[in-house]
Image (tube, rainbow, N blue to C red):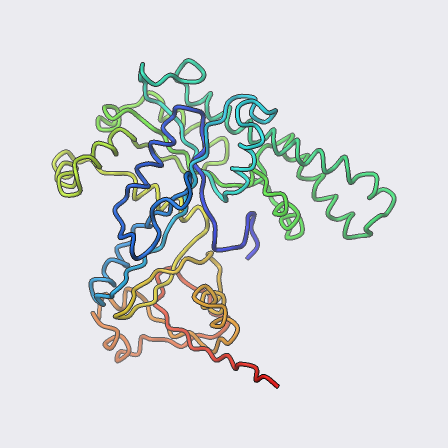
Length: 381
């Protein structure tokens, strides 16, 4: 499957926005999620990177059934990127650091502020999320235009002289098309591109190629009261920009729940008919990266393995170990719904619901797998 972005399973999402919109507070909440550190490094990897578990009831039920020594859920890797300001594309604020940090991620949590707080000043001196969205998206666009324009200018004369032949001419054509799209239509992820054009764009890691989820950070009072003068306007604006997901939530409310503790927070939400939006945000970010996962199960470990949607069985086996892909024989797979219905793996097998799949099998989210492989070691002479 060919799509904009890196083909690797090792992808991550970055939190992007203006200063003082709640990015780091949101990131800190993710870092504090309660996951056994001895099983997996979910807490901070670097000062601005964290890995958080992807909520999945199927995984929880499999762990309850197999009672494994280790539980390894799917994870979302999140990077906290420092706030940018108007003019960042020309070097204001973090300038080039901003560019490289966003280039290093594969999707964006676009954090937008609607709350008022006299103790947390807004860099633009007023609350206007529509203006803020425009600033961020314009800076991303201007950076990409500058990058592609520079490449078009530097490669044009060589292509005219025939340097590099047909291949160089085709690549240059892709750059010219991308530049025109950026200047006239906007973010490249909404364009229609050929396989060749996508391969050229992917070498550039363009900022506007990265899909976004808009996180609307409301005050705790407005979130719990379901009131906002901005949400309808934001939804309308985002629809005109390409129609990406918009999730209203409140960092203040999420912090209140965290400070209560798990049991008290659950009771509070049930009583007041509120809910934490963190699970929804995490799952949306995970799927925005085009990730799904399959499971391996047993008494030693129940684990969710992340793969890109569109991965075939040998590629999935390779996420466990490269030898599994190299020596792939078959995949023995059954569905979680069948396990849920029949309670045990043995019962699933008895019903004939465990299927043997070959190299062309397209992995489906939630598959429970066992891979058979055979790699012959080369004898030393």
